[in-house]
Amino acid sequence: MQPHSQGGRGVFRAEEQGVIVWIGSPDEAKRNPGQLSPVARAAPDFASLHPGYQGAYPPCAVSCLTLRCQRPKPPRLQTIRFPVALPPLDSPQWHTSFRAFLWGARSIGATVLTLVLFATYLGIGALAHDSGFSLGWTLASTAFVWAGPAQIIVITTLGSGATVLQSAIAVTVSAIRLFPMVVSVLPMMRTEQTKRRHLILVAHLTAVTLWVECFRFLPQVPRNRRIAFIHGLGCGLVTVCLIANTIGYMLAANLTPLFAAGMLMLTPLAFLFSTARNCRELADVIALVLGLLLFPLAAMLNSGVDILVSGVVAGTIAYAVHRARAGIVGARA
Image (cartoon, rainbow, N blue to C red; front, side, top):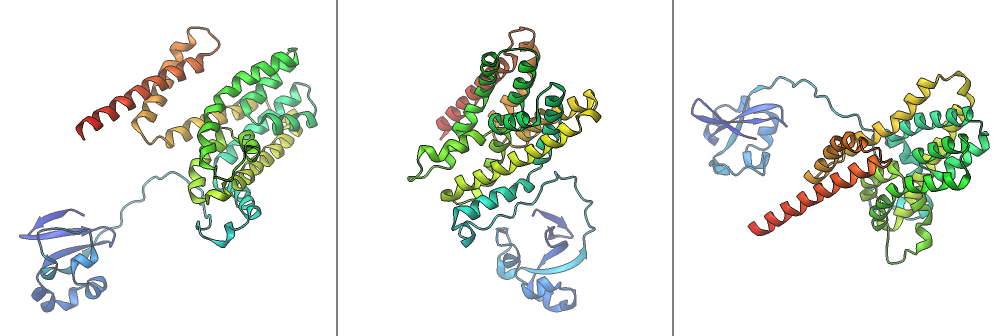
């Protein structure tokens, strides 16, 4: 709320109230009681209307006179977000692990990535059908691999005649990218009573989608119920993808190759936009932008690990910048 000069008096635009108010004396307020807004009548002291105000006028000499209402502002373009209505941290609904599991399963409707996964696994189901795999094998690979890119690797390598060992090695190499995500998520769920066996299913369910949503959901969940919540969220996402697999497998005969490929592209695009949305620090922005800019150069190496090379280089530079800025701030302090 910024003061403006008009007629020698201070004018404050109270946008949250939708009015423009004068700063005047209590005597002026008494002479013009009809011009006072209901809010000003109830609280003629400007300090009580805006506790953060620390201007030149003392609270005892301030009154609010409404002159005119502001015109409504045009609506701004905002990001569409699904509502997340989790209970408060001290709510009785968190008292049992089963209820936490149900809240996690229910939360799949609070993220747009659920729709992205559904469309992606439609394409994976169609790809498995065209590669000659059975529906049961497709569903089992979704449940046990639980990573879209890795599942595409399994289908394409085995479908092209590679051995199971070669396919397993390729999937393992692609899964290395998930290791930092698991490492960053597990500390958010551990308590003094947590044992390693409690984290096995969580580690398996942690893919890019779950990793992104953990940072949004877990602060709203009590720590001793976070594992059960993630079990529910992860199992809910897997169930959605199994349904999408089945539908895509059944519709494979009616899907053109171009349309199926387009649905598979939704996953990397959604993850890219989600990562950009979650960038909070300068280092995050540097790593993302440099990774995108360096990838074409890394692709010219024809090394087969283009994404890994560009990601490591960009992340290292971003980390160096972060450490340098932290050192400068520390030296000034």
